[in-house]
Length: 203
Image (cartoon, rainbow, N blue to C red):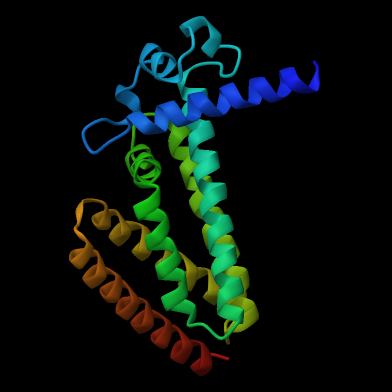
C-alpha cells in the first residue's frame, strides 16, 4: 500500500470515528446508532465501513480505547504540572473536568457502556479504568507514605469517586460545575487525609 493510500485510509477511519462521536448525545447512546447513520455522517458508502471496522462493536471498542488513551495522556500532563509546584488534587480535577466538558460525548459513551449489555464493552471500559488505578497507584507509592496495597486502595477510591461524580457534570451549567468541582476536591482531601493518617499509624 502506498504512503498516500495508507494516509487516506487512516483519514477515512478517523472520519468514521468522528462521525460516530458526533452523533452521541444525552438522548442517543452508541447502542442506538446504526452503521448506515455513521456511514452517511462520514460521507462513505455503508460497504466502505467494513474496510475499516469489522462491525459497530469493533468501532465502539476503538472509541473506548482512544478515549482512555487521550484521558491518560492528559492526566500524565497534569502530573507534570504538579511537579512544577501545583496542587496534586486541584490540578488533577481541573484537568479531568476540562476533559469531560471538551469530550462530553466520549465520556457519555464510557458511562453508558460501563454497565451496558455488551460484555466486550464492559471489559474494555473496566480495563481503561484499571489503567487509571494502576498509574495513580504507582504515583501514590512514589509520592506518598503508602505501601502498594494502601496506594491501590486509595487510588481505587479516588478514581471511583471522580468518575461517578464527574458524570453529574455532563448536564450542569458552569456555576453548578464549579460547585461540583470544589465538592470533589474537598472529598478527595478528606479521603487522602484519612489514608495518610492510616498509613502512618500502620507503618
